[in-house]
Image 1 (spheres, rainbow, N blue to C red):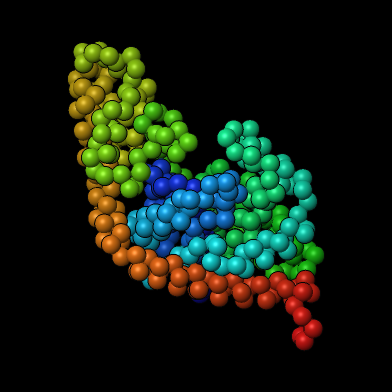
Image 2 (cartoon, rainbow, N blue to C red):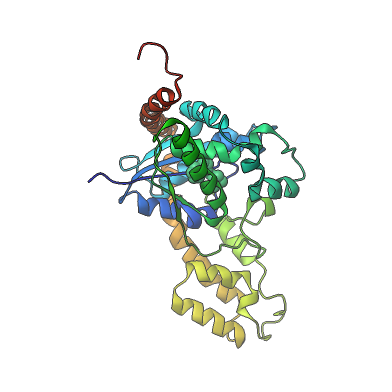
Amino acid sequence: MSKKRVLSGIQPSGRLHVGNFVGALRNWVRLQDKYECYYFIADWHALTSQYADTSQLKEYVKDVLINCLAAGLDPEKCTIFAQSRVLEHSELHVLLSMITPLGWLERIPSYKEKQAEVKNKDLNTYGFLGYPLLQSADILIYKANHVPVGVDQMPHLEITREICRRFNNFYGEVFPEPEGLLTEFPKVVGTDGRKMSKTYENCIYLSDSPKEVEHKIRTMTTDPQRIKRTDKGDPELSPVFQLHKVFSSKEEQDEAAEGCRTAGIGCIDCKKVLIKNLFTVLEPIWEQREKLLKKPDVLEDIIASGSEKAGKTASVTMKEVRKAIGVDGFSQ
Ligand code: TRP
């Protein structure tokens, strides 16, 4: 029996951080053995909000690729590509736009939320409104069965399914309905206790050096009421403890919590354990990053051959799509 197909994408809107690793990459690596996986760098999606200054886009795309490989994605097992190198995505996007009621796009929560939240950019654009539809094209063009995403992406998956049904209704069964593969992962907080996000400048980046990681953890806030070493603390109020929940063993978590509550250990002691565990996760990634950074040609080869492979699959689907709609020329 042939393997089910998985597709997922990641936006190169900045350098990748530990939250991206826990929330996406780590899971992608696990899936590559079980499914036929297509993973891509959604550079057009990054442009929907970062269109005014594209000076760092290429560097971010490269950083995402390096991190994907360093985290363990194997180009022998999965197809890794760049969205902008498979032009068929844009053709499907335009064709899907013909059948997409505006209201479907306008009601997606992330649309209004992000417009309200982001003050330094004008997101009142055609491209930004069409963000979820471009995502639908990404998914449908590979006839993906499963789409591993976090819960924030579920509305985008829902509209993809609606578009899929509408298309099949109008033009015949071309696309299978994709399903979300909800990735359950612990919340990764940043150095200030809020969700790790580049907008908050609280990230531990996969490209940070060991020194930088150590410094970021050492200067992290803890329970704000625990001021002196002898003060008893509440681990639940400490972002450091939140990270222990993600990166430390159960015993270490219990020790950290108990030590905090009883003032048995100081915050630095607690942080040292976290640093050790973070290093265990990051060391193999750092090692691979070092190697890959020295081989720009290999990176280009990987993304070029992945994009070519993806393009083949996408063009098979597009032939079917053009035929179903009737924009496939006279000869057939
Ligand atoms: N919107 C996704 C995110 O920000 C990235 C993405 C683009 C994607 N196209 C996709 C994810 C297709 C899954 C499938 O995380």
